[in-house]
Amino acid sequence: MGFGSIFAFIFGLFLLYIIGILLVIPIKIIIKLIVNGVLGGILLLIVNLIGGLIGISIVINPLTAIIAGIFGIPGIVLLLIMQNIL
Image 1 (spheres, rainbow, N blue to C red):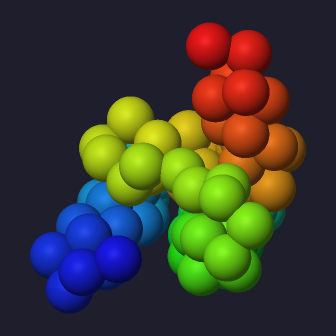
Image 2: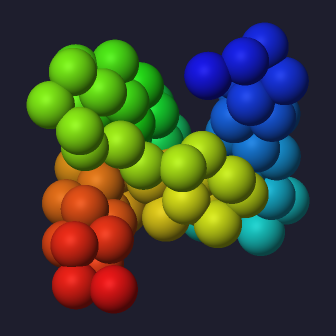
Image 3: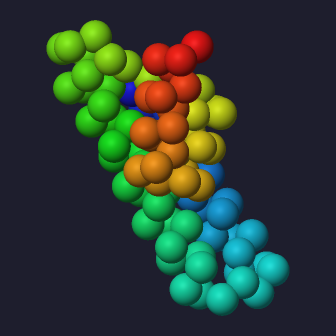
């Protein structure tokens, strides 16, 4: 995972926070989305680092980053299931 991917992920979280403030979403929902995004990003990194040893990896692109950011851990599990099915 390169520096550009990490920067794009952090920038996306920042934009999510700004959009949430502008739309006056309760802070509880904003914090939940940020936590999901951080956990999803960390798990995406862990799956690629550890999974590379056993042949499991998830390609990091904008779509997978959005899924991991919004859904968090269940999003990573969904990506792994979809990769094995397709």
